[in-house]
Amino acid sequence: EIDVILPGYTHLQKAQPIRWSQFLLSHAVALTRDSERLGEVKRRINVLPLGSGALAGNPLEIDRELLRSELDFASISLNSMDAVSERDFVGKHNSITSSHHCFRTRLLRPSHTGSSLMPQKKNPDSLELIRSKAGRVFGRLAAILMVLKGLPSTYNKDLQEDKEAVFDVVDTLNAVLQVATGVISTLQINKENMEKALTPEILSSDLALYLVHKGMPFRQAHTASGKAVQLAESKGITINNLSLDDLKSISPLFGSDVSQVFNVVNSVEQYTAMGGTAKSSVTAQIEQLRELLKKLKEQA
Image 1 (cartoon, rainbow, N blue to C red):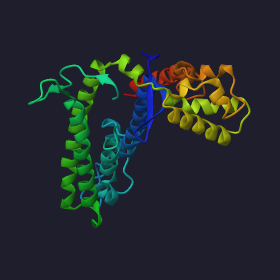
Image 2: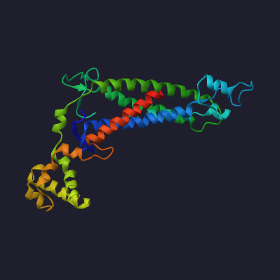
Image 3: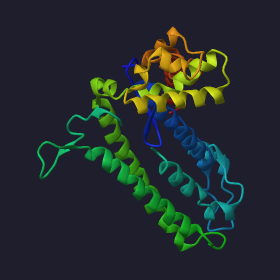
């Protein structure tokens, strides 16, 4: 499905053609940042607090280095008072998990359910429930931040609230990831509907780029493209149905090759720079993400 093209949106309006694979990759890349942040949290909390006592430390001359090695911690807490009071990592964990994040697609059962009143409907309940869980996790984050606010030094009974916050967030996140995996693995795209949505006006920026390639400064090219859109609207036609004479009345730089602009494949294939929606760029992104997944599996 790497060749499937659909409209990309800005401000909830059709903007430019993109590949479906580019859309999916945008979420995959965002998830890599979440993975990196979780790794940072792991490094911060992989510190042995055992031996800190209530606040002053341990008087029994225990070997904390041996404990660290046996319990597989990366390091030992440097200060006993800090070790028994520090809960920033709980807030960091809940903050990261609360930041986890389809189009013309079709959900297969059991990812959707029917309406209780309208039998023709297929409600994306699974996705809606995933979305709602963000509120729950944000609530836990807000709760633990308020608990930590203004606490005096060392341990206080307030800190027992951290267990409920962490355990609930972890359980919620695990459930969400399982449901999301099921949704994605059974998702079917409606290629025909995507193609129908590729209306000519989303190629207006390509018309401006055409003029840029002809030597016109982009600001002027943008204005010329806007005039073409207005002319098409005044004639009650789509921009791709403007005649060459119509376009030449806007700029003499328009030539017979302008017809190539109104092709969505040509449009997406011009974005060959790293990170773009051209097939070569999308393929490169996929390979980089595969390598990253391989490294993550090795580190797990």
